[in-house]
Image (cartoon, rainbow over all chains, first blue to last red; front, top):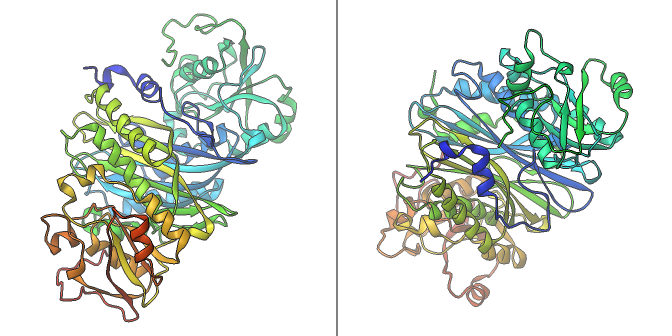
Length: 293
Length: 293
């Protein structure tokens, strides 16, 4: 019998979600940055996301920063749908030797992020793990989005320009712990322009862009030389490092002038275009390209 | 520095939730079976709950039954607030040697429970744990409840009768894996009667009743001889075993006749009364009584 280690995460999720029943209230189901549910003009966004010690943060990392990251990742997903955070539930799965001080500082980091970007903690639970287990912090949240401003990964159209915010690569130097979820930027974009497809970059452009393109049933042309590089990183790193938590989106609107006026401190870069022809290679050749399958 | 193992779960949650900011949309915050949020007549219930291998189920348990349990626990919490399930998000934290078949059967158990009781899966994620880690399945869900039918743990009034559904104790024999969340019963109760306080019994009456009583700022008188015992269990077991997933509620209405007509196959038992005087012992003396603090 195949193990999930051999099978891979994307395959597993696809297999598990294949025949799930749906309901009238589900506007967007599994496979996007968040689920979108509800009726009427104001919809709910639902998301769950976990950070695990040794994978998303190191054991000796300041818990205040870990708390910020755990929350900001979920807020970044709300942003990617064009929405804002409302309420969060916190699951702490910790081994019994973790100190109360650590847990308190973790919560301080979470509330620091929520005070800055919106949203409140309304509950959760703690679960005891066996001694020596890595800490796991799972955040479930509800956000909200106007029906008219919902953006999915699947609405991209041939001819759309592909944009990213900020700079890519090198997040491990520190940004992955204190990044700003692009809530204001995403809300401004979806309010003023026809944003056809959007997601947040968590696994690196080389994995995430093909996911968006595939769901939009397009191809793409990427101009690697145009990529906005973080200081000191290579193009390869910008493509593959991951944890950028920037917005990746497509539109045919002319947004660059208004963007620069509104967000003069946040770079916006056109990095390519969606095409009619299905393509699965980056322009210029990128043999080891992971298509996120 | 104190560890969370020394501090205890209830203390930790109380400490972490002490100074959390709230918002206009939060009707019921941390500390009840679910959070209640929203505006208008139909409110959302938010809940997260995890089951862990070795604590909530054994390693060699059929995954189909584990899936049922994981979902039914959350549905039981929705019921305890007077609500119904809508959408669920599934977080699987598994070690890589778990088989795909196991994960598939787990999902079959989850969907079996949802088909029977309502609610759909709209997303989630898988997280890889180090080899040999116990499996953890965390469920986050949104339910809904009419504002007029919300019941909390804190509305109990002196003189109320205290009721439990079903039978108590011995859940470890199998019920903990295939229990029926009391959604229909709770909805019928809250629609037709003034149910002052309600919760679901997960940690055993001896822990859970004092929690409800404390939040209602009452005392209680419990008639231990009246407890509805599962076959073959003692009063002590009925008080302490836990995982009953039955409703515990208080009311001054006369509900026994209508209940028997509506749910002839589900026992309903008056087990005591709320009192004005604060009490922290069970009638008849129960020295080792854990007040859930």
